[in-house]
Image (cartoon, rainbow, N blue to C red; front, side, top):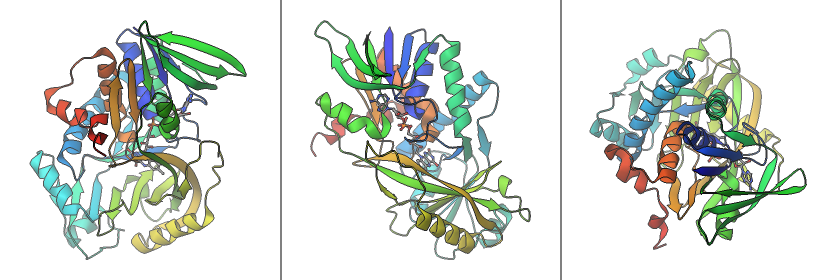
Length: 376
Ligand SMILES: Cc1cc2nc3c(=O)[nH]c(=O)nc-3n(C[C@H](O)[C@H](O)[C@H](O)COP(=O)(O)OP(=O)(O)OC[C@H]3O[C@@H](n4cnc5c(N)ncnc54)[C@H](O)[C@@H]3O)c2cc1C
């Protein structure tokens, strides 16, 4: 099949690579290039984990974990640093229960055990803490490079600097993709199109009559030095959720070579398609530094740098993945998509080929479809 993939973030690039490896003629198009800083998938690292409060996400994460191993074997190098993860605050009981129900290794942690696992972390003393060892940091930029290698090795094409203006199903079957490249108009005709446009997905889908509530925003992460006094690069990840469970609160992960990366799970501002200003917010950086001083007092909290990046909330904080005719849609990453990069490849390629997914996750993936919004 001829397949055009629009968008080469974690979702689209993984799909393009998988489809090319399955023998399809793939053209991946992006208005910028792989790893650019204006959308969602840029930066050195992301947290990966099996820990989720919902059992369906745990099941998908278990499958995804196997797919990461397969990708790492295929590409010949590790793409993840396994450091473990401590989850505390809101949703901890739900996370522990979901891990237990799905048979994932985990441990309830008391103060003494936390001191063994993460000696510099302040003991919060306000609720349970769960340890999930098979977690850590994905080398995000390297995972994108690996996917690009897979795409190219299998003969797929990448066209950067190319903005898709219209995606139009053809009466005779297939889809026409119209784009601007360096001021010139270019058209592709494909049997299938994968639309994975990240924070720009809403308008493209709207033009196709696919109405999905998507709320893109810009969020910020800060790398702090960590310092020579602590082996911060080998320390675990942290998710510290406010008691009401409404956001991820504060999260942290080692980003070897740069610093300990921390984020406050509150958008800095709305994402506007035409706004390419990615200047970090100084007040938010200071907030992150203060939080490191409080939670990790032995760390050197001097900021190395901060980065603004986009994510796109769906109406229920879950991915939106579906096929409508010859168009496969992937969006609504809800700030938790990077870790699922290999799963996106499998799922989106499966939708393109109309092939069933493994029984263990088929219903879970199907639940990410557009039908769930029908009554809203
Ligand atoms: C601060 C922050 C922290 C995060 N932390 C984590 C984490 O710890 N763990 C985790 O798993 N996830 C995390 N995420 C989320 C993760 O980064 C995203 O879920 C993931 O990168 C989404 O990828 P995507 O492919 O959907 O979108 P994108 O990466 O945004 O890709 C979409 C692509 O489509 C292209 N495009 C759009 N419109 C067009 C068009 N018209 N024509 C051509 N190309 C177009 C864009 O240029 C872009 O490259 C975080 C996100 C942020 C912002």
